[in-house]
Amino acid sequence: MNEQVISMLAEGIKDTLYMTLGSVIIGYVIGLPMGIILYVTGKTGLRPNHYIYRVGDFICNIIRSIPFLILLILLIPFTRLIVGKSYGSTATIVPLVICAAPYIARVVEASLNEVDTGVIEAAKAMGATNLQIVLKVLLVEARTSLIAGFTITTGILLGYSAMSGTVGGGGLGDIAVRYGYYRWQTDIMIITVLLLIVIFQIIQMVGTRVATGLDRRKRKGN
Amino acid sequence: MSVIEIKNLTKKFEVEGNTVIALEDINLSIEKGDIYGIIGMSGAGKSTLVRSINYLEKPNEGSVLIDGINLSELKEKELRKMRAQIGMIFQGFNLLEQRNVIGNVCFPLELAGTPKNEARARARDLLKLVKLEDKERSFPSQLSGGQKQRVAIARALATNPRILLCDEATSALDPQTTTSILDLLKEINESIGITIVVITHQMSVVTEICDKVAIIDRGKMVESGSVEEIFTAPKSDAARELISGKDIRYTPVKQLNTQKTIRIVFKDNSAYEPVLANAVLKLGRPINILKADTQNIGGKAVGEMILGLPNDDDPADEIITYLKESGLSVTEVVNNE
Image 1 (cartoon, rainbow over the protein chains, first blue to last red):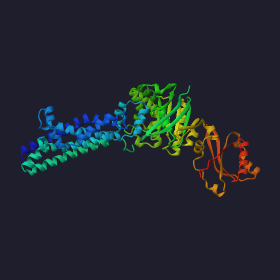
Image 2 (cartoon, rainbow over the protein chains, first blue to last red; image 1 turned 135 degrees about the vertical axis):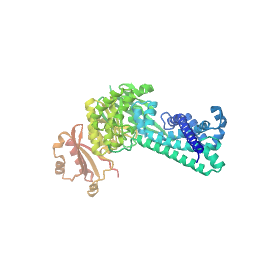
Image 3 (spheres, rainbow over the protein chains, first blue to last red; image 1 turned 120 degrees about the horizontal axis):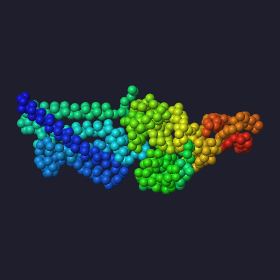
Image 4 (cartoon, chains in turn purple, orange; image 1 turned 120 degrees about the vertical axis):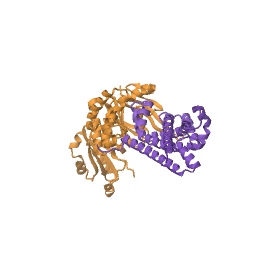
């Protein structure tokens, strides 16, 4: 394997990580508040609001029902408007975020729903405001589940970022398609796949470690 | 002025288009320093009632006054302030699982914006009070049920409330732990003069610590008064059921063919006289003792017996009259067969 290929793969790893982490972070900036709003306005939430919930619910369902590859193409004009071009790794972040945000909102909503309603009632009885309940009770009590959700989301976005390679998105997926598929260079294809597996494993391992490390529920003894 | 005053309170729920009346026209006043029991079978509406006291449940009609302040007239912010002055503990403890013991006790102080050092110092004092000073750094998952409830009590007391609401606080605990938690509540009541409202379905909890009791049955308050009064002479069916248990089907009843069962309560001097033996000797009729028990009610020893009487009416009536004349409180036990 020559130096050119190695530097190309290194570039690919960098782009893949850039797209994955970039989209997961921006995705959470949008999706986390969205998920909190869904929980708060839901039927059993802190301040049920049928209309807000229905709108959020509808948006989530619409976006989530569009396959990512189609979303990617559908959003080309929008992407061009925001980043100035429709190819390359920065451009790919746009559809990744649009795809991830409603998914993240759902994952967050599900995590918050797991929090024992008794604890929320206790906080209310102590005179907590809804904001205090969200920040000090819900997000803290659900943190293990939230981090697990974060890990799963990152894994999915890693896969999607590779998928965007088919339309010139950059990163390891792009390399796999260009060299492995169009040029029949199976060895490069295999290497990119192995690299993706390694990256995925690392994400999953770190996520699980952080989640269990922060969980105070199962630690017996002392 | 009463600490808690509930006037004509009615609460309805909408369940799938049907209106269910959870509480109907409840009137209750609880004085400062009382340990007030609210007892009823499950589904009677007592949990809804206790949640009306801190307005976690807003009544449809009627009012709740705390120290003369009508909760319905408070703005959201003032109501939250009021809630901070009413501590509450629960059957399920409801501790924050991701915070350690001292973190849990500090939590209400943190909500109120108390400086951290001050909060910690106060929490340590409270942990000493509930005898958990050595568990400060433990997490709830490492504690037993009784210890968890102690943490919950410390947490409920952190903001120096005037009232402590206990919603089935001992129902998830074993008998020994229940006793120790009840003793702790009593101790707190005596040492800081806090008014305690105890919601329970167990008469034993009421007789052990309460001064006064209200009996809730199917959303209505059927009886209220001092525990001694209600324990010795229950007037409502619900009270009788709660005192003697629902099913008094002791096997000896059938063997002796006695269907008439009565409950007698001894107090004061009657405990010194051999009343039963005298009745048997005098009337020459058998009396079967089905259950006998002594309980400490408000610091007085009160004896309770369930007796099986002869089947035919006349001698049974004679025995009842004799027992009544001897100064005992006699009530007929409802047979559920």
